Amino acid sequence: MSAGSAFGQDYFRQLGTPTETSQVLPYVTEEGNTDLAQPQHILFQPEREDRYNLALGPLRFSASAGMGVMWTDNLALSSSNRQSDFVISPSLNIDAKWRMTEINTLHFSMGLGYSYYLQNSQYDTNGMTLSPNSELAFTMHVGDFAFTFRDQFALLNDPVSLTGLSTNSGSGNFRRFDNEAGVTTNWYVNALLDIGLSYNHFNLWILGGNLAGYDVSDQAIDSVSLSPQFKVGPGITLGLNASASYVRYTGSNTNGQSYMFGPSLSLDLTKNTQIGLDAGYQYFGNAGNSAGWNSANSNSIYARVNVDNRLNDYFSHRLSFSDTTEAGYNSNYYNLYDLEYAANWKATPSLTIDMRLIYQYYATPATFGTDGTAGTPSSSTNRYGTEIGTRYQLTPSVSLGLSYRYFYSAETNPSSNAYQNSVQFNVFYSF
Image (tube, rainbow, N blue to C red; front, top):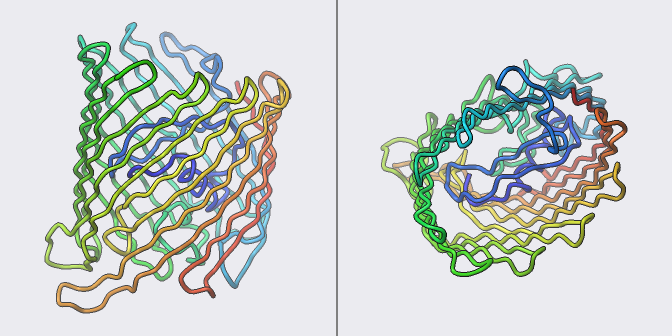
């Protein structure tokens, strides 16, 4: 939702239930936005080379189907009532592009999934899920201006991907719909200066029951951002990020507002090493509605650092860190620290090995009523995750995947600590 890292958010999004772990495939990330309401976008697809191998008139598209079998030793991420089970997870992915003209493009992608628990049917997916890569986007160019209209949507079941809440909810399912619609405009003033302006509207809708012990509210966030960038020299770009966001809740939280302002730097140290830096001031405060729980206003420094390195044609890795304030669930906001390392090794032309190490710390402030009544106490959570996965291209159309994931969450109350091991095997077919 803010300058959080794509890898970390995606990792914990997948850990909740196998609905979001039915594929062991390459990750493609779209970086660059620090808006409060603009989460990083993960495209969850098969190999992208020549991926549009089907055609229907002017529409180019690819379609692929997968089947995952996962074993986990703690399917509800419970600290005391640990339950193991096997989970069957079929999935279907569609990725399409219509190049209407040489410079105007319509893009659509959607991932459908379902999870079936062999021994604990109460955790079966309540209907289909939509993976976070689902989107409809239209890009058009008018003179020196580029406009992108985008709607990204996801229908999810897992409680863990809601960073900012205690992991130990004892719930295997938490069904909700995320939708983000917006428009981004880039004005290419000249070869050195690019000015970006965007507006985004984000919604979180809770479907069905709430998490045990929580009152997670429906959420709406409107965000406007300005981001001029200037190429100082070869491989050096300086920028400025400024954004304002307004957060509305339907439940007991007081509405909030946030402002972010600071410089950015993109630096190519070498041909194979890039560094991205963002830092500045961030304010998050109450927006003045008379009812609901309040948190003390936050005045803080936000920061994000990414280091990408391609060692050779076969091995690449990334180290990233971010410190941000995010819109909360049981409080107006929470502070999030995210440290991640990811590596990709193409061991042979057919075998790829991926590895990720993740650490997250988030702290939620105490809340109080408008009359001074005490609400929820402050809390903090440390989350650790590691994953190693292999992908083997058996034929041009068939790929196999095997992965192991470990997750551990240390809560304010040690008796609520929880951990999970999971092993998953996947078969994927690209049409």
